[in-house]
Length: 250
Length: 230
Ligand SMILES: Nc1ncnc2c1ncn2[C@@H]1O[C@H](COP(=O)(O)OP(=O)(O)OP(=O)(O)O)[C@@H](O)[C@H]1O
Ligand SMILES: [Mg+2]
Image (tube, rainbow over all chains, first blue to last red; front, side, top):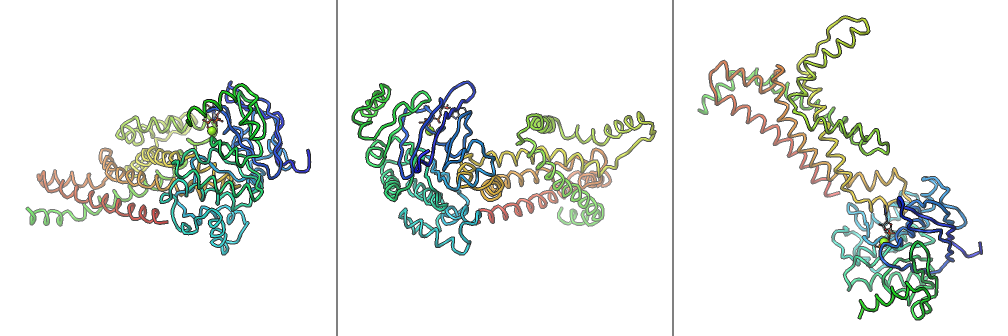
């Protein structure tokens, strides 16, 4: 393991019953790298990203995070690791009974990262980052999709994570709100955040990603720099996938 | 008519009050016992163990699938007989008995526990799994997630269902009169028989039950609104 590897997958395998979703995946992600995970629906992109923080338990193989094999950890030990891996979901999953401030500060306050007296200031600081300071007292049901997702990003950042995981963060958004969320993600990447992003936003992948993983039949069928991947995809199924996307977009 | 009902109510005030007391005792005890039992059954129903889940499921199905009157008569008539038979096998020859009010409390509590457990389970199931995942992904423990994320949301859904169940319980507790527990309905029926008045006593009964259920649902709504503001 080199100095700057932050996540390493070794023989990562996941079966749901008889169906093999992830098939002995080996891969590494370096610190400050942005990896986008793309592939047809149902190929296991969500499963793979959820295996990184053990929201889903792999069937076999290991997931090394900062050198520690997460598959050997107990539930309690995982809590400490999950703090360092922020996750953003397609459906936001904001806590509807808490206002924006409490959504952001619930975890850091409960886990003793910041004292309750500084919670509001911390929330304010993070909301500034996502451009939503005026929403600090709002409840989630009063936010637009784009705002909700930006709050969800702020909530994840409140734990000062080393890695951010995004599972189709813009797929549930109206088209006009996609940009504001991608912008926040782009800023994060520019600050050097390590990111794993499942997305169908090829523009984002081209512009922001360091690498593209094309997932197919349980394997990372192609692992390439974005410009290589989009101009000369090697894998035939990746070629097919990209040409279909082009058809849809034209 | 108004004058008559007043005097009739006044003349039977002691009977009515003692009936009210019995109804309140049975209802309050059953709400408490039924809720505790219902919570236990709900937790069993949500357990990881298949057998425990199956036991809870069967319990709920049987109680919801049989008439309350059968359950009540079973507790009052059959349970002492079964207990006596078991005791006689162990060499003790006494015939246990159960008083009407405790029998009523047991039957109504057990019946209510099935509905309470379904209300609780429904409340928890209505909280999206994504809520738990979001909380856990932040590093919150199972316990903290339950306490600060899942339970507050579940409670908002459980509370109204629980209110409905308690209102139903008060009304349905009137069934205890068939084993002779001297509740409101029992007293009202006596009143009807002794006075040969087929109207007024029942209006009095309806009014008392209505006041009880209406006050209860107001109280529940008050707390419901309070929860919404948090
Ligand atoms: N909890 C589960 N139980 C059984 N099968 C599952 C479960 N979760 C996912 N699967 C299956 O595993 C496969 C991969 O699912 P996954 O959600 O990871 O795909 P995906 O690439 O994220 O798809 P999408 O683009 O639609 O989000 C699918 O066939 C799915 O039906
Ligand atoms: Mg998915």
